Length: 179
Ligand code: GDP
Ligand code: MG
Image (cartoon, rainbow, N blue to C red; front, side, top):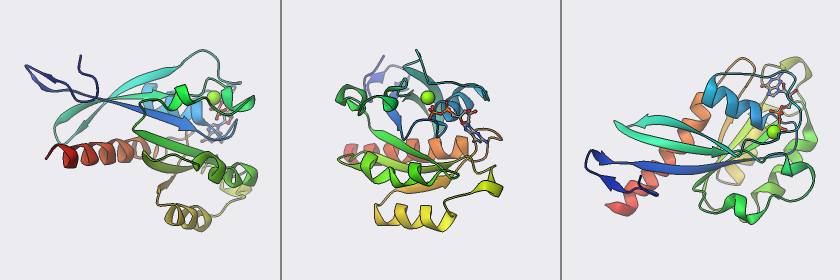
């Protein structure tokens, strides 16, 4: 199989490594399980085990394999290691709209990340206990040149779209480089 965009007889194949970052318990693992398996786990504890999941997305008639990496709970104990970011071409920075401290952490997570970047305000189903407004999310995204979307892994709002916007952006950048 091709690496980033190796060619095979049937046409091009794309494999994009995308990483999830953000404070513990913002919903990273549930966004991934919603995106890759259409599952939500209301009792999920700290993420253990699963390193990444692969989901095929079609963009402009091209099959793209998105290899989405989860932190495996590392965010609890120490900064995510550089090995986690190695080869990544996109990142979703997730915060919890009901927990301001997780929004304040976004800038720390952003440091030195240059790949395609999506800011995700998760748990938008919890409107009644919202702690970060949509405008604040938008403003930060504009300031830092990020894509922005509010999501809910619980009721599936925008989960597919959030991942696909990043994948499309990576694909578009790649196409520009090739042409
Ligand atoms: P992670 O530590 O960032 O991987 O977060 P998890 O995916 O383990 O989720 C942490 C907690 O938030 C779990 O109890 C989830 O059930 C809950 N959770 C995750 N996403 C959502 C969401 O969109 N809405 C609501 N209401 N709860 C969520
Ligand atoms: Mg997790």
